Image (cartoon, rainbow, N blue to C red; front, side, top):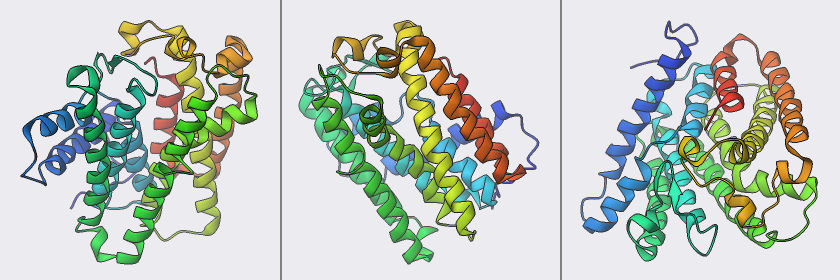
Length: 304
């Protein structure tokens, strides 16, 4: 079995590609679990889950496994489940009842490619499949108590107190004045919780001190905020062709973002401040956190 170790000779770019190819292959396998699926739903699920994407959440899961020197096979179902939930969230986020976007990852959104009803059902099916993949994982099934904790972490991150609740708060805030505390809470629920879960789910497989877990938890919180601030900045700094989605969508929907609240320069400074906290935590975690440091740098400096 392949072991994830920090001594692997690949460059960061090669390792990123290795993990992307790995999670894509397992996504394809997972999408084939259920044979008796209506063809249009099957096509839409493949379209949404296997389209071009950065796979940042699976990368964080694999980098966490690297930190703990876990077997790569033990993390595959976690990486797949995280990406399936993320894909489902993007489908629903793009719907006319939500952000009403028609472009995602450089292609028509799922409801534009198929139709609104199919898109809703596709999101529902991908979310269900995420939990099915965790429940059927041969590696997780050997540790049923740990498996239950991992499933619970994902459910909590995606549910009413996490992503779903954050989406509602985001909708309710449209056209309203929102301060930075409220904005951070919206983004923490809507985006940060799933990013943090990408780190904490693999951590359940490891034997580690409570202090290390606290540091990883803090790292997950901070890198989730960095991701969102950078996402807000990219929407106004980049064009639609590079970004792969409609720029100024948040502005058109009258959403408060870090640039609209703080201004561009102060939003950049805020991202740098939080990223400094990220680096300090990674320094405390030591040499084994090299993979997490690479992914963090990728998040901070991405151009799309």
